[in-house]
Length: 287
Image 1 (tube, rainbow, N blue to C red):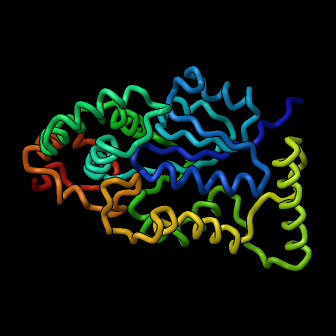
Image 2 (image 1 turned 60 degrees about the vertical axis):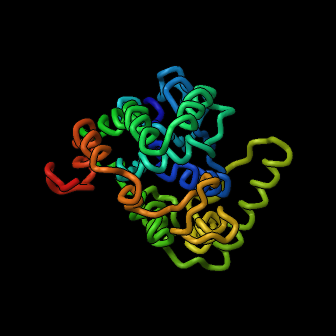
Protein backbone atom coordinates (compact mmCIF):
# COMPACT_ATOMS: atom_id res chain seq x y z
CA UNK A 1 0.00 0.00 0.00
CA UNK A 2 1.37 3.41 -0.95
CA UNK A 3 2.17 5.80 1.88
CA UNK A 4 -0.34 8.66 2.26
CA UNK A 5 0.74 12.01 0.89
CA UNK A 6 1.72 14.33 3.71
CA UNK A 7 -0.24 17.51 4.24
CA UNK A 8 1.15 20.64 2.60
CA UNK A 9 0.35 24.07 4.01
CA UNK A 10 0.38 27.04 1.67
CA UNK A 11 0.20 30.81 1.51
CA UNK A 12 -0.55 32.08 -2.00
CA UNK A 13 -0.39 35.80 -2.59
CA UNK A 14 0.35 38.52 -5.08
CA UNK A 15 2.64 41.54 -5.28
CA UNK A 16 1.65 44.37 -2.90
CA UNK A 17 -0.98 42.26 -1.13
CA UNK A 18 0.79 42.31 2.27
CA UNK A 19 3.05 39.49 1.09
CA UNK A 20 5.91 40.31 3.46
CA UNK A 21 3.53 40.53 6.43
CA UNK A 22 1.97 37.15 5.69
CA UNK A 23 5.37 35.57 4.96
CA UNK A 24 6.86 36.79 8.24
CA UNK A 25 3.91 35.54 10.29
CA UNK A 26 3.80 32.12 8.61
CA UNK A 27 7.57 31.87 8.93
CA UNK A 28 7.35 32.30 12.70
CA UNK A 29 4.44 29.87 12.95
CA UNK A 30 6.45 27.31 10.99
CA UNK A 31 9.53 27.76 13.16
CA UNK A 32 7.52 27.23 16.35
CA UNK A 33 5.90 24.09 14.95
CA UNK A 34 9.03 22.66 13.32
CA UNK A 35 7.62 22.90 9.79
CA UNK A 36 10.00 23.18 6.85
CA UNK A 37 9.15 26.58 5.39
CA UNK A 38 10.20 28.02 2.05
CA UNK A 39 9.30 31.23 0.18
CA UNK A 40 9.24 31.36 -3.62
CA UNK A 41 8.36 34.38 -5.71
CA UNK A 42 8.01 33.33 -9.34
CA UNK A 43 7.89 30.16 -11.44
CA UNK A 44 11.59 30.63 -12.19
CA UNK A 45 12.36 29.95 -8.52
CA UNK A 46 11.12 26.36 -8.85
CA UNK A 47 11.72 25.74 -12.57
CA UNK A 48 7.99 25.77 -13.29
CA UNK A 49 7.29 22.68 -11.17
CA UNK A 50 6.05 23.65 -7.72
CA UNK A 51 4.97 20.13 -6.86
CA UNK A 52 8.40 18.72 -7.70
CA UNK A 53 10.15 21.52 -5.83
CA UNK A 54 8.16 20.85 -2.66
CA UNK A 55 8.89 17.11 -2.87
CA UNK A 56 12.60 17.65 -3.57
CA UNK A 57 13.10 19.92 -0.55
CA UNK A 58 10.61 18.08 1.68
CA UNK A 59 8.73 21.33 2.33
CA UNK A 60 5.85 21.44 4.81
CA UNK A 61 4.75 25.05 4.34
CA UNK A 62 5.19 26.85 1.01
CA UNK A 63 4.74 30.62 0.62
CA UNK A 64 4.26 31.50 -3.06
CA UNK A 65 4.29 35.27 -3.38
CA UNK A 66 3.21 35.68 -7.02
CA UNK A 67 0.91 32.71 -7.28
CA UNK A 68 -0.27 31.18 -10.53
CA UNK A 69 -3.11 28.77 -9.81
CA UNK A 70 -1.94 26.36 -12.52
CA UNK A 71 1.02 25.52 -10.24
CA UNK A 72 -1.11 25.25 -7.11
CA UNK A 73 -3.70 23.00 -8.76
CA UNK A 74 -1.14 20.19 -9.01
CA UNK A 75 -0.50 20.01 -5.25
CA UNK A 76 -1.95 17.06 -3.34
CA UNK A 77 -3.26 17.10 0.23
CA UNK A 78 -3.02 20.90 0.31
CA UNK A 79 -4.61 23.33 2.73
CA UNK A 80 -3.86 27.00 2.22
CA UNK A 81 -4.96 30.60 1.90
CA UNK A 82 -5.10 32.86 -1.13
CA UNK A 83 -4.73 36.59 -0.37
CA UNK A 84 -5.84 39.32 -2.77
CA UNK A 85 -6.25 43.12 -2.79
CA UNK A 86 -8.16 45.76 -4.75
CA UNK A 87 -6.26 46.01 -8.08
CA UNK A 88 -6.53 49.80 -7.98
CA UNK A 89 -4.78 49.92 -4.62
CA UNK A 90 -2.20 47.45 -5.91
CA UNK A 91 -1.33 49.82 -8.76
CA UNK A 92 -0.89 52.81 -6.45
CA UNK A 93 1.04 50.88 -3.82
CA UNK A 94 3.27 49.28 -6.46
CA UNK A 95 3.99 52.66 -8.07
CA UNK A 96 5.30 54.21 -4.86
CA UNK A 97 7.20 51.05 -3.92
CA UNK A 98 8.86 50.73 -7.32
CA UNK A 99 9.64 54.45 -7.39
CA UNK A 100 11.81 54.33 -4.26
CA UNK A 101 11.66 51.55 -1.72
CA UNK A 102 11.30 48.04 -3.16
CA UNK A 103 14.59 46.10 -2.87
CA UNK A 104 16.36 45.43 -6.16
CA UNK A 105 18.96 42.84 -5.11
CA UNK A 106 16.67 39.93 -6.02
CA UNK A 107 14.90 41.81 -8.80
CA UNK A 108 17.54 43.51 -10.96
CA UNK A 109 14.99 44.22 -13.70
CA UNK A 110 13.44 46.77 -11.35
CA UNK A 111 16.49 49.03 -11.57
CA UNK A 112 15.83 50.21 -15.13
CA UNK A 113 12.10 50.47 -14.47
CA UNK A 114 12.74 52.60 -11.36
CA UNK A 115 14.86 54.97 -13.43
CA UNK A 116 11.98 55.24 -15.90
CA UNK A 117 9.55 56.14 -13.11
CA UNK A 118 11.90 58.69 -11.61
CA UNK A 119 12.21 60.49 -14.93
CA UNK A 120 8.50 61.26 -15.27
CA UNK A 121 5.73 62.85 -13.21
CA UNK A 122 3.40 60.85 -10.99
CA UNK A 123 0.48 60.79 -13.44
CA UNK A 124 2.66 59.35 -16.20
CA UNK A 125 4.31 56.96 -13.77
CA UNK A 126 0.94 55.55 -12.78
CA UNK A 127 0.15 54.87 -16.44
CA UNK A 128 3.46 52.97 -16.64
CA UNK A 129 2.50 51.01 -13.52
CA UNK A 130 -0.89 50.06 -14.97
CA UNK A 131 0.95 48.40 -17.85
CA UNK A 132 3.64 46.94 -15.58
CA UNK A 133 1.03 45.06 -13.50
CA UNK A 134 -0.34 43.09 -16.45
CA UNK A 135 1.42 39.82 -15.58
CA UNK A 136 0.32 40.05 -11.96
CA UNK A 137 -3.31 40.59 -12.87
CA UNK A 138 -3.11 37.65 -15.26
CA UNK A 139 -1.95 35.54 -12.30
CA UNK A 140 -4.89 36.82 -10.27
CA UNK A 141 -7.20 35.87 -13.15
CA UNK A 142 -5.82 32.32 -13.02
CA UNK A 143 -7.71 31.78 -9.75
CA UNK A 144 -11.04 32.40 -11.50
CA UNK A 145 -11.89 28.70 -11.67
CA UNK A 146 -10.77 27.85 -8.15
CA UNK A 147 -12.73 24.87 -6.80
CA UNK A 148 -12.74 22.92 -3.56
CA UNK A 149 -12.76 23.74 0.11
CA UNK A 150 -9.03 23.35 0.75
CA UNK A 151 -8.13 27.01 0.08
CA UNK A 152 -9.48 29.99 2.01
CA UNK A 153 -9.62 33.17 -0.04
CA UNK A 154 -9.03 36.34 1.99
CA UNK A 155 -8.86 40.00 1.10
CA UNK A 156 -5.88 41.92 2.44
CA UNK A 157 -8.10 44.82 3.49
CA UNK A 158 -10.29 42.58 5.66
CA UNK A 159 -7.37 40.76 7.26
CA UNK A 160 -5.29 43.80 8.13
CA UNK A 161 -8.27 45.75 9.50
CA UNK A 162 -8.89 42.96 12.04
CA UNK A 163 -5.53 41.24 12.13
CA UNK A 164 -5.85 39.30 15.39
CA UNK A 165 -9.27 37.81 14.73
CA UNK A 166 -8.45 37.20 11.06
CA UNK A 167 -5.18 35.39 11.72
CA UNK A 168 -6.79 33.15 14.33
CA UNK A 169 -9.43 32.22 11.74
CA UNK A 170 -6.76 31.55 9.14
CA UNK A 171 -4.68 29.35 11.45
CA UNK A 172 -7.83 27.52 12.52
CA UNK A 173 -8.66 26.85 8.86
CA UNK A 174 -5.12 25.55 8.29
CA UNK A 175 -5.42 23.28 11.31
CA UNK A 176 -2.49 24.99 13.04
CA UNK A 177 -4.40 26.51 15.98
CA UNK A 178 -4.97 24.53 19.18
CA UNK A 179 -8.53 25.28 20.28
CA UNK A 180 -8.77 23.33 23.52
CA UNK A 181 -7.85 24.33 27.05
CA UNK A 182 -4.10 24.85 27.28
CA UNK A 183 -3.44 22.80 30.39
CA UNK A 184 -0.18 22.66 32.30
CA UNK A 185 0.96 19.48 30.48
CA UNK A 186 0.19 21.12 27.12
CA UNK A 187 2.19 24.19 28.14
CA UNK A 188 5.11 21.99 29.16
CA UNK A 189 4.91 20.23 25.80
CA UNK A 190 4.96 23.58 23.99
CA UNK A 191 8.01 24.76 25.98
CA UNK A 192 9.77 21.47 25.18
CA UNK A 193 9.03 22.07 21.50
CA UNK A 194 10.57 25.54 21.75
CA UNK A 195 13.73 24.02 23.21
CA UNK A 196 13.92 21.53 20.33
CA UNK A 197 13.54 24.33 17.79
CA UNK A 198 16.35 26.33 19.43
CA UNK A 199 18.62 23.26 19.31
CA UNK A 200 17.74 22.83 15.64
CA UNK A 201 18.57 26.44 14.89
CA UNK A 202 21.87 26.40 16.75
CA UNK A 203 23.20 23.01 15.67
CA UNK A 204 21.57 22.55 12.29
CA UNK A 205 20.06 19.18 13.16
CA UNK A 206 16.56 17.96 12.40
CA UNK A 207 14.52 17.03 15.49
CA UNK A 208 10.99 15.62 15.67
CA UNK A 209 7.85 17.73 15.90
CA UNK A 210 6.12 17.34 19.26
CA UNK A 211 3.20 19.74 18.74
CA UNK A 212 0.98 20.14 15.70
CA UNK A 213 -0.73 23.43 16.52
CA UNK A 214 -0.05 26.69 18.35
CA UNK A 215 -1.87 28.00 21.40
CA UNK A 216 -3.96 31.06 20.59
CA UNK A 217 -1.92 33.29 22.90
CA UNK A 218 1.27 32.48 20.96
CA UNK A 219 -0.47 33.03 17.62
CA UNK A 220 -1.70 36.42 18.80
CA UNK A 221 1.81 37.24 19.99
CA UNK A 222 3.21 36.54 16.54
CA UNK A 223 0.63 38.87 14.99
CA UNK A 224 1.47 41.55 17.58
CA UNK A 225 5.17 41.27 16.73
CA UNK A 226 4.32 41.94 13.08
CA UNK A 227 1.80 44.77 13.46
CA UNK A 228 2.09 47.80 11.15
CA UNK A 229 3.28 50.04 13.99
CA UNK A 230 6.04 47.56 14.83
CA UNK A 231 7.17 47.41 11.21
CA UNK A 232 7.22 51.22 10.88
CA UNK A 233 8.76 52.18 14.22
CA UNK A 234 5.52 53.49 15.70
CA UNK A 235 3.79 55.05 12.69
CA UNK A 236 0.08 54.26 12.61
CA UNK A 237 -1.93 52.91 9.67
CA UNK A 238 -2.91 55.84 7.46
CA UNK A 239 0.15 57.93 8.35
CA UNK A 240 2.05 58.09 5.06
CA UNK A 241 5.80 57.79 4.58
CA UNK A 242 6.67 57.58 0.89
CA UNK A 243 10.22 56.52 1.76
CA UNK A 244 9.04 53.40 3.62
CA UNK A 245 8.24 49.99 2.16
CA UNK A 246 5.23 50.13 4.51
CA UNK A 247 4.01 53.40 3.04
CA UNK A 248 0.46 53.83 4.34
CA UNK A 249 -1.41 50.57 4.82
CA UNK A 250 -4.97 51.71 4.07
CA UNK A 251 -7.74 50.54 1.76
CA UNK A 252 -9.07 52.91 -0.90
CA UNK A 253 -5.95 55.08 -1.22
CA UNK A 254 -6.34 54.78 -5.01
CA UNK A 255 -8.99 57.51 -4.80
CA UNK A 256 -6.27 59.97 -3.78
CA UNK A 257 -3.99 59.26 -6.75
CA UNK A 258 -5.79 57.82 -9.77
CA UNK A 259 -7.40 60.22 -12.25
CA UNK A 260 -10.42 59.52 -14.41
CA UNK A 261 -8.04 58.70 -17.28
CA UNK A 262 -6.17 56.19 -15.12
CA UNK A 263 -9.43 54.59 -14.01
CA UNK A 264 -10.78 54.42 -17.56
CA UNK A 265 -7.68 52.49 -18.65
CA UNK A 266 -7.84 50.20 -15.60
CA UNK A 267 -11.50 49.50 -16.28
CA UNK A 268 -10.70 48.71 -19.92
CA UNK A 269 -7.87 46.29 -19.09
CA UNK A 270 -8.58 44.87 -15.64
CA UNK A 271 -12.26 45.36 -14.86
CA UNK A 272 -12.80 41.59 -14.77
CA UNK A 273 -10.23 41.27 -11.97
CA UNK A 274 -11.90 44.01 -9.93
CA UNK A 275 -15.26 42.27 -10.34
CA UNK A 276 -13.83 38.78 -9.76
CA UNK A 277 -12.77 39.65 -6.22
CA UNK A 278 -15.83 41.74 -5.40
CA UNK A 279 -14.25 45.18 -5.27
CA UNK A 280 -17.10 46.48 -7.40
CA UNK A 281 -20.57 44.99 -7.75
CA UNK A 282 -21.27 46.01 -11.34
CA UNK A 283 -19.03 46.51 -14.40
CA UNK A 284 -20.19 50.11 -14.89
CA UNK A 285 -18.89 51.44 -11.54
CA UNK A 286 -18.31 55.22 -11.67
CA UNK A 287 -14.91 56.69 -12.48
